[in-house]
Length: 203
Length: 203
Image (tube, rainbow over all chains, first blue to last red):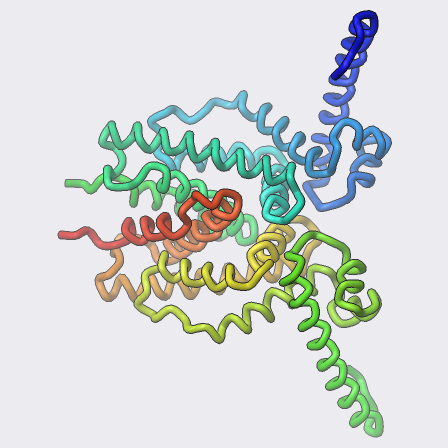
């Protein structure tokens, strides 16, 4: 952002107004997604539903992927006000709690899977950055949890924390997909099984 | 298909010709996907690349999802000529072999993740039928493998075969996604860890 001395206050004023307008559009977009799910569609169609011009949406969010990422992050931020799993929660159980929170917001699970699938395609930098950084952060947090549980003797000492973290996160994502397609797949029971497999031998 | 007596031979001839033409388009579509990946695009854009009219593509495949499913199934059918994992292969190892085969065909992994993400949206019956039936078949096959390994004393007896099957398939899908976004995630080592966790206690 470039500005000369006399323009600075006005620029800051416009900037603050821009932030407020962006937030307003984002709030409305979250409502729209909660109502309609994350059905793949054009930025133009979303702009219409949100009630802004296509140009405004492009100005504030750049691309469809960037809008979807903003919607997901904002919904997740709001969800963060929920109580978090205590640090001694087992890996599978903590993923179960996180999945349950996501499912409470309509359209969030579909939005997440759409973003991750987009991230695997070429030329989708916003989706790719979102998914890669999200998995990296989740793995780091989960590996730390695994280490703490190992130190406390509550998780097998012979598993590598980073690998176990990737495995638990992968299992949770994949189980959620299978469950959405077939509700007889017991996401929670399968994660509980993984927790049991990761528990130290009884002796 | 309705036909009167005298039209029957011609109708059968047209039908055979239609089948051949559909296969021809499918072959060309597979080449196009191998070159370009499964980037989300319109049926019209694919028709252009395949070199047929949009009307022809709609006639032979109905919708974009149906074309994508046909491309995936045909690629998979060709891959089936590869040697299969012997029945006593451990669950994680058999998923590793299957994933390796899929990765050998360019664009297949992206196509798969796109179809599964589409299946989670409303009003995508072709993608939904594909993903739901594929997971159901994979789970049944994997549960059978788990039971056989349990009978042979090569897998813990205290895990429920259907749940273990869902878990292994979920882990493999999720790990593949993480690996595609970050090649330092060791898909194979994490599946090997899951095999070790599922192995009977040493005593």
